[in-house]
Image (tube, rainbow, N blue to C red; front, side, top):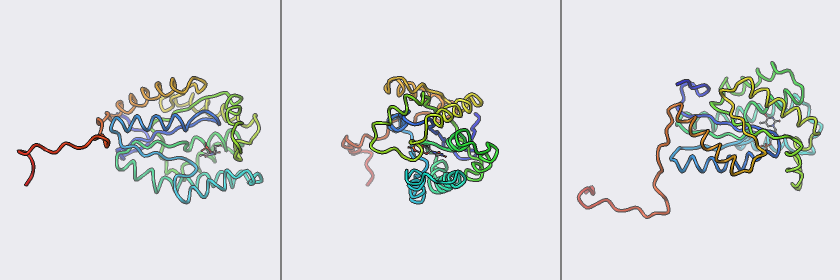
Length: 241
Ligand code: TMP
């Protein structure tokens, strides 16, 4: 079976993408719990961030007081956080055979800094390759949502971050960028209509992801021991001295 990104590593890289207010966090939480209940070893992480250095970079990137940030500075900071995450978290987890669930990855840079900010897509590709060493996700879930609805959902938050505070036109370009990438690579992308009720999305997501894992030979390993249930002692005749 063809393994796209992880090359020789036995794990599986699953990324989540989408514009603001699409409910990625909730869906990732539910999916990770489900995969763990099936016995998969899962590493959950996010971008920007996921490491001590990356979290510091995240604070710089999302601070609404940093409105004057140069677009080139912005893209390089996202790539810096990514390079650190690969080194500290993603590569080691894939090497151990984990399913790595990453909230955003290089497609976010292609879309936000490329399609929405207008940085040349070829330059973005080169920067992504420098940061990732060419690692590509095995599967990317795109939670697709009209930004008018997405922005309405996040307006309730006390404070919008630097990217969330961008104009509607910016978020329209983000959506267009994601839909273009998904149309160009239908094998990798799993596009989900994020305007559906969250439990419908979760049900569809669980089925689709487990099917894809099985497709590359990663069958559900079976549930591990339930930590709430007291372990039964081995019968006397097989107990070791
Ligand atoms: P989030 O983790 O809450 O989705 O916030 C991260 C924000 O950063 C979000 O608005 C998308 C944006 N972003 C980029 O612009 N480029 C990137 O490469 C990544 C990873 C995120």
